[in-house]
Image (cartoon, rainbow, N blue to C red; front, side):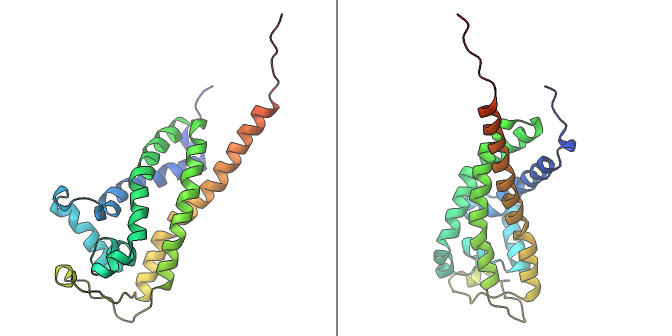
Length: 203
């Protein structure tokens, strides 16, 4: 059967673009909290600092240790999510990009597992952003090295919260839609398999 072009599969195209955007962002920002510092070139290591200075992201900033050791330890749960991202999600991104491009049905179960897992782990991240206090002035994160030994009182401006929500919500909604979509696709495959006529061996 001829492959249906990705452009004619709108939902698959959205998932493909989602993985294509997510993969470099994972390596360049999220996983820097796990890399040995000597592995990261100077320019790349400055990306999370720039991002946190702009957004005061309590998750990435705490995981990176920018807000002090106590905050880093308090966000051990988030670093665990980053390990899941590194060792489960990254392989799914690569496999998903290939499978979506080819229109393969064999990836439906894998994408269902990924999407359900990601929806679940992104929800507490949104809760943290929504529960972080609002401050009229941005958090002073300009001197990370000097502040690393202290514990900062985390806060966000209204603009920073809006920026973070606009960043995190798509990473919740796309996997949520993918969970429902892939669940229905897997159910359809199972129904088709069950309803297919069974051939009997001729004697």
